[in-house]
Length: 408
Image (tube, rainbow, N blue to C red):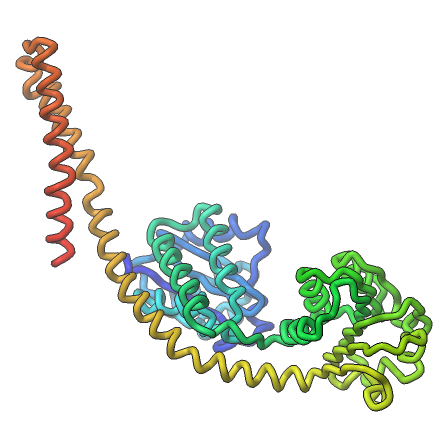
């Protein structure tokens, strides 16, 4: 079965993120389309993994995953794709077979194949993808075996190495800076801009206990959507200049080409308060006017400063890759042995049933007349003897047979 295991991967290494997005399948449509693919291509097992910057297909088949197979694969799964698009994905596919496919999945779950090394969210994404595929009736015994080894290995990586200890994302770095400054959970937080970065930042802070949010955005509906998630209030960006409820922290990230927070607006936001404020400015160019940093009592955290920390932490994480690879190599060796044992177990699982069939034939056909002539006591003793021999045959000799097969 190991040689029949295949993986087709699309990541930042072989495809633009925008093109990867075309391969995502709505959750409501996954079961119908994936089951149709499994049946059409006669796949024994199938698993679908889809994240924001990765799409992978894991499956078992006796077919060779050549260009023609890949064309049929994508044409079946994505019937709306043009021939040109299907050929593009067939050409760009990163294909892994056998133990290389197992190794690739181990690298994925251990995050060393990720765009950001050490981001441990991937282990949850892999586990959830397996559970979802299993629920849809797509997976089987082999992928179950691979995933069990994968999850155990990833957990070992995150426990025994420092690959995930130093944060590298802007969101997590900004949070760590706030935490190190002992900002109270009740701090008044103004979020200016409701794009992806600020949305992630707000949700991250909410998750970690902060609870006092006000969101400003040019499009009020987007501000309201984020504010609803954060259980805060929403205002149009034009109201920033007249906001009078004060603040402790500002998180700003807009697409403006001018400074959103001018000295005049900042003075209005202060409402006469003299204590030190924190401004996390993730925008490029900056939303905060430079003179505010010079003349006000403010801790300014810029995206450039966060990026320097991120780059330094990435270097530290990269030093751990060799250690991670050693753990993965050990896991591959273990999996080969586990797979070998499982293959023998599957090959021998019919033996107990065969033994029971022989017993039934002996009692009900071959020695039927003799068996019926026995009195109840003799029949009971004979049943016990046969039962004892049956159990011993299915334990001792089967263990010996397994050892012989494993040696071979």
